[in-house]
Amino acid sequence: MASWAALSPSIVEYFEGEDFYRCGYCKNESGSRSNGMWAHSMTVQDYQDLIDRGWRRSGKYVYKPVMNQTCCPQYTIRCRPLQFQPSKSHKKVLKKMLKFLAKGEISKGNCEDEPMEPTMPTMEDAVASDFALINKLDIQCDLKTLSDDLKESLKSEEKKKGKSSEREESNELIQSQDMEEKLDSGEPSHSVKVHTAPQPGKGADLSKPPCRKAKEIRKERKRLKLMQQNPGGELEGFQVRCQPPSLFPPKAKSNQPKSLEDLIFESLPENASHKFEVRLVPVSFEDPEFKSSFSQSFSLYVKYQMAIHQDPPDECGKTEFTRFLCSSPLEAENPPYGPDCGYGSFHQQYWLDGKIIAVGVIDVLPYCVSSVYLYYDPDYSFLSLGVYSALREVAFTRQLHEKTPQLSYYYMGFYIHSCPKMKYKGQYRPSDLLCPETYVWVPIEQCLPSLENSKYCRFNQDPEAVDEDRSKEPDRLQVFYKKAIMPYGVYKKQQRDPREEAAVLQYASLVGQTCSERMLLFRN
Image 1 (cartoon, rainbow, N blue to C red):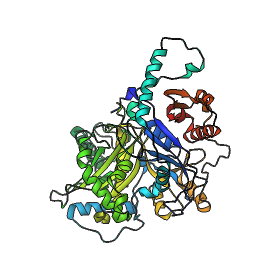
Image 2 (image 1 turned 120 degrees about the vertical axis):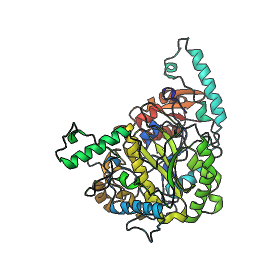
Image 3 (image 1 turned 135 degrees about the horizontal axis):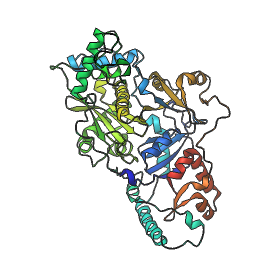
Image 4 (image 1 turned 180 degrees about the vertical axis):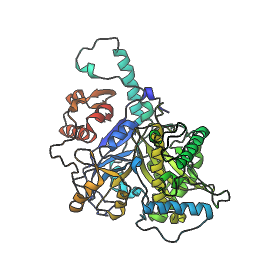
């Protein structure tokens, strides 16, 4: 696991994706357009900042739709879990699960307004065009050479420490930290290495709400009893008005609506028909739980892809599964003020009677839980596992927020108003859409009227507003080139090809000033 105090920069390799590709949503043969880069390694803060600019990852490939040109504009959507209230259809799904677990009852048919698709877009929907781009590029990046170059760069920089530089430009060269771990993952399109992730920790059973001390529970029960006796609520030192709100309150009274946690964590009878639990497993082949469940998880993925999306067996092999759902560029981080599970990529496994029936792939980031993908056993489609897993992830975000207050959003990927099967994400309220020009969040209710009139919209109504993190000083962008790390101002003096300048400046405009100064842009 990476030490919080010794994190090294993200390393990315930007590709100019100027061609049009087949759209996975509307099936237009040449309508999809996006820009992309390969992330050899990435800090969770950099990825947080990137998704707040409309980027999204599939495996280690990070892409950003060209919003005003692509056939189906994809708007980043986030839900606000702290204010979230389950809808009537959401409650039906949760009650259906409880009835199945308790009594083995299987409901007939689906709930009204319940999406038939999983909570996230299918892999081919999300990056169909980007697969084509990756295959077309046929990346042949020799990362062993890169690692050797970085070692040499470190040695040469150490030699320069005691000597005064002869030119002002050499002062701009920065010392690189230990980055070879980031570059030993092999060729992006062939081999996989996943960084060590934090251990899930004992007792991290997501099927149950966070533990509360017995004393606190007794006090809470006593307070509620006194409230019933005296509505004023000020008996024996209990002052109701001063009680902080809890995300996991005791069971609601009959005259109050049940919270999301009440519905999810309702107690089952001792003779329940099924045993159910949710496990959070770090995406790391060095984690014993991830490694031991890999075979079962992979088999479930194949079954899902073939049954739900009619993929032929050769398109859902172990290589594809590993590359896109088990290989993450995110470095696992576990700072003292972060969530107990740490930051990074995880598989949230849903176990029923000793076998996995669904897996939600998620990223835990500084300000959010970001949903990447979901695959499940088609035999259990009657449980509406797409909706159920989304609600569990909302509840999980609320749980993490209790220790890490800044972690308060649930990112659901892309909202595509022009695609009927993707519009259901707007039902998780309150939620916001990201303005594709100024990168500010706008409540979805304010965006929908504009989207009814046009596929592409600028949601920020202030005509003078601009992207506050736009690239203002491209010369400060960090480049890794010829065994050295240097600002773009130095790098460009060694270049004669105008296309190279155009590519670097395009990259800077897409990632923004902050990320361009933190991440290392590898140039070959």
